[in-house]
Image 1 (tube, rainbow, N blue to C red):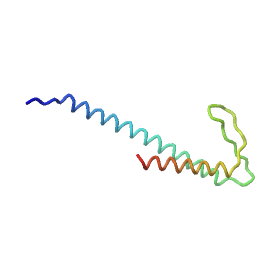
Image 2 (image 1 turned 180 degrees about the vertical axis):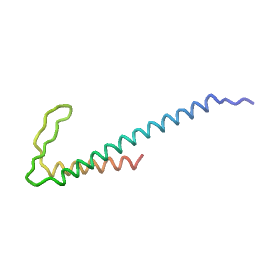
Image 3 (image 1 turned 90 degrees about the vertical axis):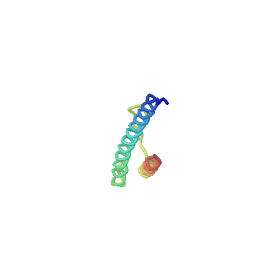
Image 4 (image 1 turned 90 degrees about the horizontal axis):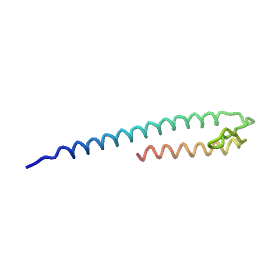
Length: 88
């Protein structure tokens, strides 16, 4: 009878690597959720007459945006991130 421990340790290592990778993804998602909560709180506490600007992706250009639409989209994005975290 032969026991091949090489495959078992390799599988164990793969599982550990996968677990560490998944843990890192969860940590990153948690960080983004905290960041998004701050954005939502900041937008919620703005006075009605304040202007809101949205940064264009991959550039340093900002465009004037509607505060309530921006708040709604930020809340939706936060909900999606929370759902994604729960699904993990």
